[in-house]
Amino acid sequence: MISFIVHGGAWNIPNDMIDAHRVGVTSALRIGWKILEGGGSAIDAVEQAIRTMEENPTFDAGRGSFVNAMGEIELDASIMNGTTLRCGAVASVQNIRNPITVARTIMEKSENVLLTGLGAVRFAKENGIPTCKNDDLIVGRELQRWKQLQVQKRFSAKDAFKGTVPSDTVGAVALDANGMIAAGTSTGGTPNKYPGRVGDSPLIGCGTYADSGIGGVSCTGYGEAIIKVVLAKTVIDYMEMTGADCATAATYGINRLKSKVDGLGGVIVLDTQGRPSVAFNTPRMARAYRTSAMNADVIEV
Ligand code: ASP
Image (cartoon, rainbow, N blue to C red; front, side, top):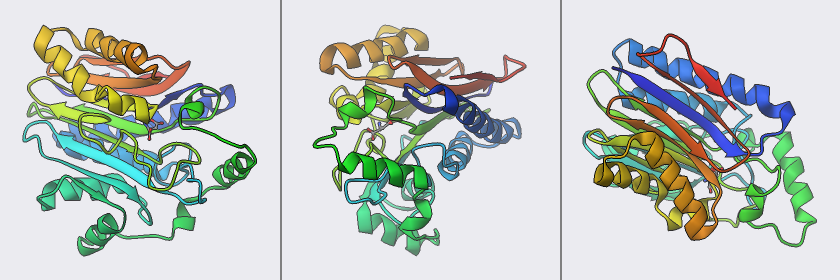
């Protein structure tokens, strides 16, 4: 059994951006699926699918991300191997096109889990990962948004999830032919965020979790709320403790996010049998999945 699911953020995606989201999650799904079909690892599928979405300026990850209150891009990402429970993450990193690759390298080549800012860039350079100018990551759409936000008195992270301001964090969860489940998440965070602000995405257990004996989860949404309910691990724990199927656990997680901290967001989940499931309480969520029990991709926005 192999199975793969990706997401491109949960929010009120406007009609004129639906196609771009559909195309973006479809190409990420196909890249990961090809790796899994060829006998590749869940980690490779997750990393490569997320890299594609980091390169795609449609999403709030890598190039095209929101800029912070200083007009700069700061990126967060994490990845986890559900068989070894090894994991790696970067937070508030600049000058990096593909933070998911730095996160993977931290997981595989260091004793640490999370590196931030300049330390993460230093580690990337030491390990031959290319750096770039921050300006290479900024797109006109986001500069415009930043300028508009400067005239508002106050714009909170939570405000970003109420209106039509996007939240296109990306994530992926894979089950490979060896039974390994891996999960990963990458984001530029929230628009106009306070410099140094870190959301749920690089925090293991909050934005990402994988355990090959239970399942894997990647989250998106209002990070400050997701952190408070430790959303990814909450979904995994619910499956483990109650024996619930992944659809029930995904819904449980989102209901808890809402009832405990009034949070908005979404999760993608796979279980050990590769059953995919999605739950969200935002108007829309971009996602795509496929399993070896199906003969076509499912793409939904
Ligand atoms: N969860 C991300 C954050 O708060 C944002 C998102 O998913 O859109 O940084």
